[in-house]
Image (cartoon, rainbow, N blue to C red; front, side, top):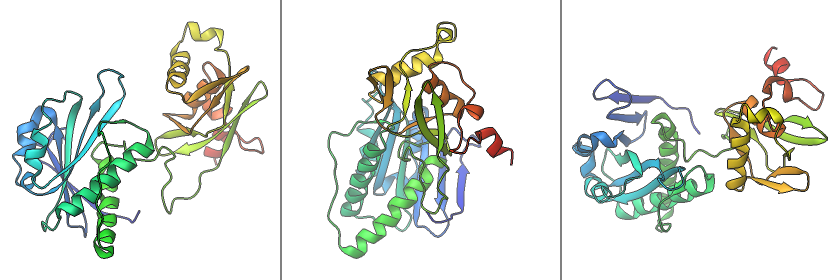
Length: 281
């Protein structure tokens, strides 16, 4: 993504309440706020415009992050149709300040955004089907830029559900792959902006350590990953079926080890240099 200057306006001075966001040299604008300020979010003049919107929260049945992505020629009216959905606690919508978004434009953006949300796998996408629209080449290029800008602003507004779990960013140096070995098993991963990523095909021990009975969070995390299908039992080991993101190297190492582990020493380069030694340079 291109470098950008972001302007955020806190309407009430509180970063958790109603706020707007803009990027330099871009005609788009975002309005965001919690469900507790539903009326204030929709009372904004911007909500009368056409655009795309996001409703984010937690699915009450699975406890997983959930997101609904929609479009509307009049944002205010479309979001109001979702008051009977209880999963969401935040609303964000994007409009164009020069009001040049047509129905075809926002249908195209909606389809792209739903596809991105599903591909990242970070949240349950509530939408029943993918939308979308065909656009002339010039319009399509304009909407690709709009799509990129939306993805730049969403994390700043607290929504990372469309960020690829690999943390890969165009122009970002490739992260050094590190290895965590235990009992002849090997896991591979690398640092990412959100913490640490274990790569698909990595291995973890099959049994939890005895210490996990006293400090059970690694055991619980491994169990959740099994339930989600991210960890698959194979003979005497567990295998990662996809890339999985963790909050820190130690959390990642604990899942591989089946109990508490120091990620700064557990993760090493092919030459045996620990993560701690790398970061001490």
